[in-house]
Amino acid sequence: MHETLLHASAALPPTTEHQTLLDLLGIHLSGGSLTALAVALFILTYAMILLEKYVHRTVAALLGACLVMVLGILTPDQAWGSIDFNTIFLLFGMMNIVNVLSRSGFFEVVARRAMVLTKGNPARVLWIFSVLTAVFSAFLDNVTTVLFMAPVVVTVALRLGLKPIPYLIAVILASNTGGTATLVGDPPNIIIGSVAGKGFGEFLVNVGPYAVLASAIGIALMHLLMHWRGEMSSTGSAEKLRAVLADETPIRTDPRLMKQALGVFAVTLFLFIVGHPFGLEAGLVALTTSTFLMLIADMTPVELFEQVEWTTLLFFMGLFIVVGGLEHVGVFETVAASLTNLIGNDMGLGILVVGFASALISGLVDNIPFTISMASVLRELQGTLGEVMNPLWWALSLGACLGGNLTLIGASANIVVADIAAREGHPMGFGQFMRYGTPVALVTVIVALGLFYLVFQATH
Image (cartoon, rainbow, N blue to C red):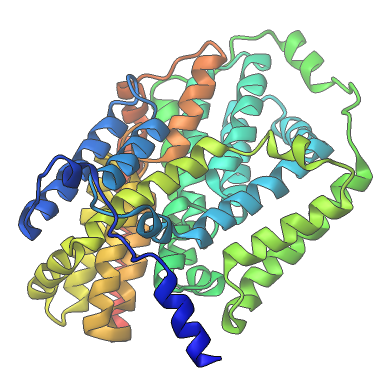
C-alpha cells in the first residue's frame, strides 16, 4: 500500500508556485518593497473609501482586495484565509433574523406605539426614538437598526411638522453609542470580539456601563443643542397633530411569523451570552439560529436573501483581504513593537493612547477598516504582553464606536442614514452633521474613556 502511494505521488505533476502579475512582467520585489506596496494599496483603499461620492465603498474595498491578489501580496488561498468568517456569519445571520422581524410587521407596531407615546411633543419624539434606537442597536447590529428606524423617523417627523434632519442625526448618534454596549451592536465590536476571542458577556460587563452612560449623555446633549437652535418646535396645526395621533389604520402583521422571529431572536441572545465558554462563537450561533428560522418560517430563502445587505458583507470581505496583506508582510508586528515601546507595561497610558487615538482616527476615516487594522496590532501586542493588555481591547471598542460620531464618514450607520435621508428628499450635509455629531462625540468619548481610565487606576 505504501509503495503504491509512492508510485502514485511520483506520477503527479510537480507543483508550481503561484504566478503573479509582477512575476509575469519579470519584476521581483524585495521584502521592503513588497511591504511598501501593501501599505500603498491600503492607503489607496482608504482614500477611495473616503471619496465615496465618486467610488462606492464596497467597490473600493473589492478593488483593493483584487489588487492585493493580482500583485502577489497574497495568493487567492491566502486572501480567502484572511477573511474573518465569524464576523461575516454574525452579520449575515443577524440581518436575516431582522429581515424576518421586519416582514412580520414588528417594527411598524413599535413605531406606531412610539409615535402615540410622543403625543406629538418634539422632545418626546427625540427621546423615545433615540432610546429605541440605542436599545435595538445594542442587541441587533446598528447598521441594520438604522435601516428600518430612519424611514420611520422621517415619516413621524414630517407628519408632526418637524424638520427630519436633526432627528435623523439623533438616530445616528444613538445607534453608535447604544451599539457600543454589546458584542453584536457595532461592527467594530464584532471585529474585536472575533479577533480577540471576547464573548457577549465580556462586552456587556466591560463596555456596557460606559456605553449606557454615553447614550444618556448623548441624547441629553442632542436635546440641548436642538433646543438652543430652535429645532424643537412643530410647524403643523393642532388639528393636524390630533388627526395624526388618532390614526388607527390597521398595520399589516403576521402574528405567527412575529412570534417565531422573536422566539429565535431570544434564543440567539441567550446563546450569545452562554455559548462562548463552550466554543460557540457568535457567528456560528447567528448563522445556525437564522437558518433554523428560515426552516420554520413561511418564507423562501430567495425572499429573505433579497433583503440581505450584500454590499456591507462584501465591503467587510474586501477590507479583510486588504488588511490581510498588511499582516502578511509584517506591518502589524512593527506597529505593535512601537506601541509596546511607547506604553511599556503601563496599561493606564495604553488606555489613553489607544482609546483617544482610536476615537480621533475613527472620526476622520471609517471606523471599520481602522478597527480591523488596530485589532491586528493589538493581537500582536497580546502575544507579547498576554492577558494583562485586555483593557486595551475595551479602550479600542469605546474609542472606535463613540468616535464614529465625530463626522459623517466616521461609521457605516452614518452613511446609511445619509443615503436614506437623500432618498427621502432631505439631504444631510457634512457640516450639518458635525454641528451635532462632533460635540456629542467629544463629550461622550472624554466621559466614557476618562471614567474607564479612572476605574482601571482605582482597581489596579
